[in-house]
Image 1 (cartoon, one colour):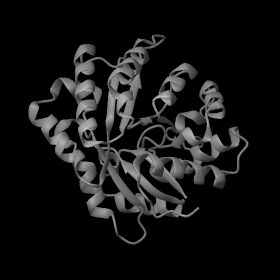
Image 2: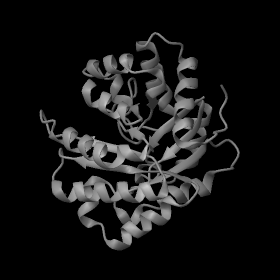
Image 3: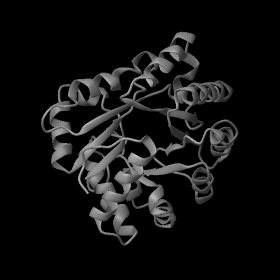
Image 4: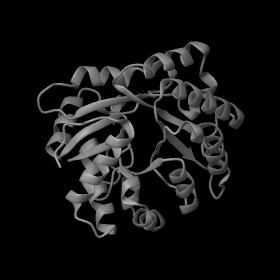
Length: 275
């Protein structure tokens, strides 16, 4: 079975349909999903945890875990109460990661220094709570300053913790992956790795050590081929995994076992998934 290492289950695009979507994930061989707790802003960080508690243990559902974090775009909105709430959420047993956090220079709205301050502050909270982090890093077009700033802050403030994390929805270059690997990070590939213009990503996916890879949907976004353009859902992580496995010349089942073990090792969880 597979794990979807990043899905926004609290999206409004799933309203009223989540039980059916989760059941389809189970039918597709998805044994676990990490529900991302950023919502539409800091006030909604706890929604992913609520979903976990609502559906875990129900028959026919995958195992769910949650994260909590303040998205780069929302750092200018964050209050002292929000940071305190983040710390509280990271203490909950189902909340296994802090994120997605990081930097985004592609979109405008939250000034870069404010993003950097918020990123560093959240790394500090995650350090205290001993939770790995989920990194969002999106540069402006043809400008790697976002990667340089993000990885530089991680190397300074996060690498010494040894807690590691995941580079979510990886879209960088080989040197960025290498720097993350040196800090104990996993590299996660989403549906866009299947797109025709993503040859560089596919090449990176073949160069990475198998023990450093996980897969995700980033649902409801980035549906993989042949479903590109549709609302993505966790069950379709199997399509992304199969595509990466094929690029590596691997059996899809073998790849699923490896990525599940990678996720389990990082977060120290034991999902109810088969080999």
